[in-house]
Amino acid sequence: MKIKVNDNVKILSGKDRNKTGKVLHVVAAKNPRTKTKVVVEGLNLRYKHIRPKNEREKGQRIMFPYPLDISNVALVCPKCGKAARVGYQIIANQVANAKKKTVKQRLCKKCQSVI
Ligand SMILES: [Zn+2]
Image 1 (cartoon, rainbow, N blue to C red):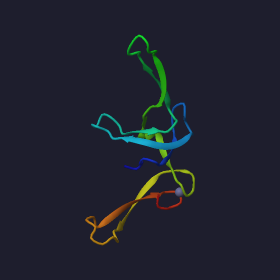
Image 2 (image 1 turned 90 degrees about the vertical axis):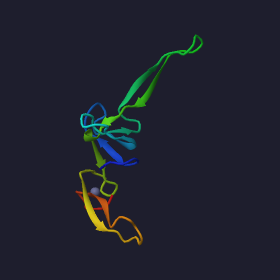
Image 3 (image 1 turned 30 degrees about the vertical axis):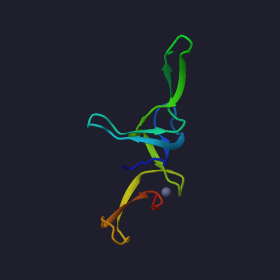
């Protein structure tokens, strides 16, 4: 997965295009027909309508961030501050007794720094 929770992302489509925000959740695709989605803090807000449960309660509309397709967001590089494509670098694991011999690192394709 190229995007993780707490990453800063830029939204590329929809009404919040060009805004950036923090990823709260990554919702993995359950089957090939659905896409992986991300929930970005404070962006792509929609109303959720809540019906009253009893006579004393009122119905409510609650704003909440709606999941966006992962293809509609781009990771913002913390080093260069640009919406960057992500590459990977495989490096040998230096940690002793680690089960994995190699570690995958994310790289910003613009400034080549590890994210
Ligand atoms: Zn960068």
